[in-house]
Image (tube, rainbow, N blue to C red; front, side, top):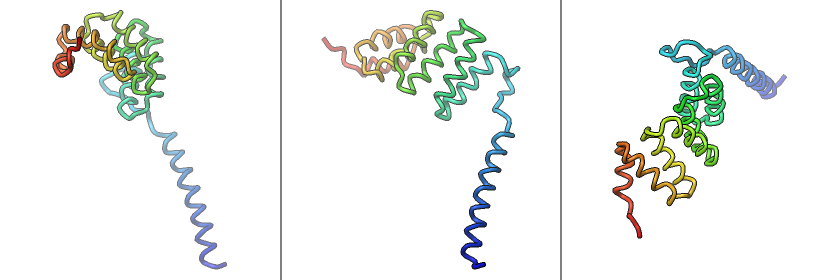
Length: 156
């Protein structure tokens, strides 16, 4: 047998073996766990998982994690806010605002929630609607919202 066909066969075998090893290695790896959060089936665990998935750009995975968290803690404003942020990153502004608005209804004095709502509205192309949320966030002490408003024209 010539060396070229033999190397091709070896290359295919090596490639297939590498894919198999990757599959097995991934299947055998443990899921990320935060040692500061006890238990794998708690709202805190799934909130943490969602945050990690968002960090790496897996927003669909983050939404699934946040939905699992909400099933365990249906009145947690932080989970609703995080869900809204993930939807914002995906460009799904309807669901984003629904999640953030629910967070605000549960914790109306959280400046970060109002600021996040304002940015979701801006990204959705609804700048005039964003201004009251920026103003509310600024009233509640958000320095970022205050800085944003200082840089914007007040208009007529």
